[in-house]
Image 1: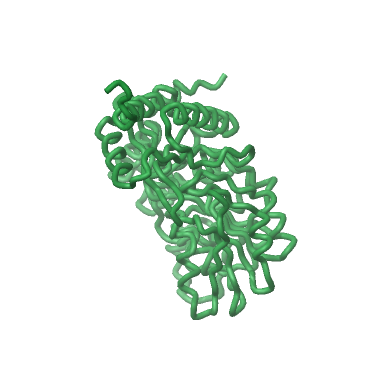
Image 2: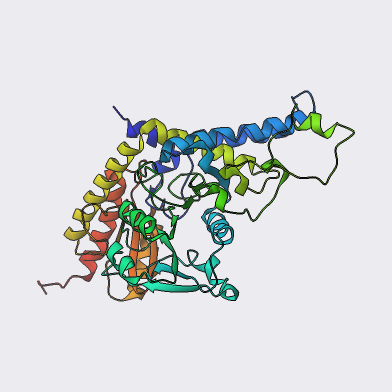
Length: 408
């Protein structure tokens, strides 16, 4: 049986606050914190036979991150690269996929601003971005299909919308893109780690997610998925020597070979790792990410999703009781771990409420796009009903303040 109480114990800060904001910048489990401390101590010493061997050993410590990511999203090892963030991954996608001049890209009008930015900077290539309007917070595949014309060469979308919690039907969207012969690039920052994502069953060309939100690893390392079917079609925007195949005998032997030359025909690896910087890496970030993800894989992403959605349902029921307006669409098959609500019509009062929640150690956020959004709550596996009840208790206080006094 999955023990979420044991998992919660890896987050001692939960004894002091109701942290319900994994969708902003989350907190790492103790195993990741300890791994970073151990690496810092390791880096401060040179226990290997040489400093060259020490450098190679540090790089190998990143391997666990690749393995845990592959398990979590059910992808092939060759399809995974480590990147700094979702922003980094989206920029790789925008600059590695060379679209014909005058191409059109479709995005939802609810997207976080980073989603379109890399393509917005390609006006010199005639790239046009077209907004597909949401329907009361819902982002529908049929609306994207209706917007496709001969100029559309790509859809860029968040698998979960940050200001409504809407879970995109990626399977249907992927099939649509495959049929139309257009690229599908996905920002999965609000899905991976919170809601199951099985890439063996979904067609996506490129998908990326930073580690600092639902993956509980705020150390500057996330991942990039590149579908192996398109690997050879794309050109990296970075070229580093560590993107080459390892030379015979390893790099320390190669560097000590008198006949090497700085210029020759290079053979780069044919996996997603060719999209990495290819130089000295963010070792602490990768190590922490691997450790954090090991906790996800021990719990099982299906179990985490069930826990998160049930907790979100519990929250939604409580929000209705205190008179809040739930913004998150209650549509089966489109539920994520995010719940967004409004308590006041006046945004100034809403902001005061947010400050009150923070003063009472209830951590949530406020998010809007295109006049859609509100107070956003993230229900994650280290949360329980006590955290939700702490939020609802504060809302009940606010409700009693705003309701009319009928006895006067």
